[in-house]
Image 1 (cartoon, one colour):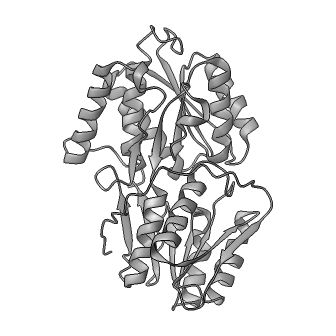
Image 2 (cartoon, rainbow, N blue to C red; image 1 turned 180 degrees about the horizontal axis):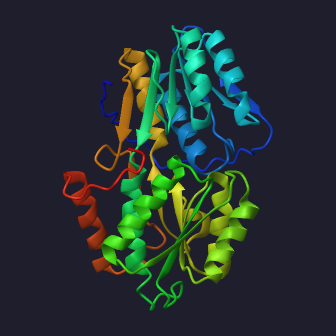
Image 3 (cartoon, rainbow, N blue to C red; image 1 turned 90 degrees about the vertical axis):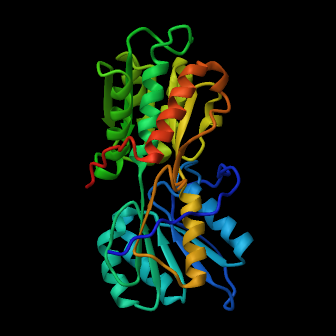
Length: 340
């Protein structure tokens, strides 16, 4: 399978979407003479301040800078994927992007039915002559988050840290696409401290902040002082719990540091915005690739700037993390991908 790294243009800081989620919604701006792009969100929809909002930011940047027309669809349920994929292709879209890996099976069928439409799917690989798969090396960013957590949890001079050396992870669902965050997090933590304890749990939803808060409070009650979440909008509840108990949370997908200033240690940013923008660029040039793989080297994943916590953290710790980052980029450290 032909592969090429997609290096998206760097865009500005991710906007925190304030659009409510819930029932299915559609927003569109169309002009028949322009390149037309549609994006289907994953569970939780816009306003998750995470994966979907990051993708939408990339789409907005493409509209502004590349002069394309756009449409965003927020399904009420993953089962509506086939309907929307078909409708969007039928309506004459040049590129249809789905952010929901749950659409992988139906995408195979729809792509064959509409060979003149280009499709793209995130976080899973789907074969097809008119399908692009966008994969991220989430394990690389998560490794850095785990290493940072293992260092910070040793520093009991911080009011957010206890003396138990326990950190934890909360995922939206128990799946390879989420467990890649957990595996990288654990690998990075054990790289610093092989004896560190890492708790883990799942909420079985990407749109249930109350469940996220409940799960986080349980882990904090067991001694965790740093909780990494990869759970979409459910993660808002995790961050709320960290703020309530004055411990650290770690954000995901976008820069979530400002949600609870001083209680979000960092965020493992998955640059969905860059990837969406790059797909549109490639589409306008008719240079789609079969598979895009984006890691630290390709600026597909990275840690947030730690705007509200950097001054709290030991300079030595930060230097160690930068050193690990450089080692991953150079290939000296190869973080395991459990999906392969």
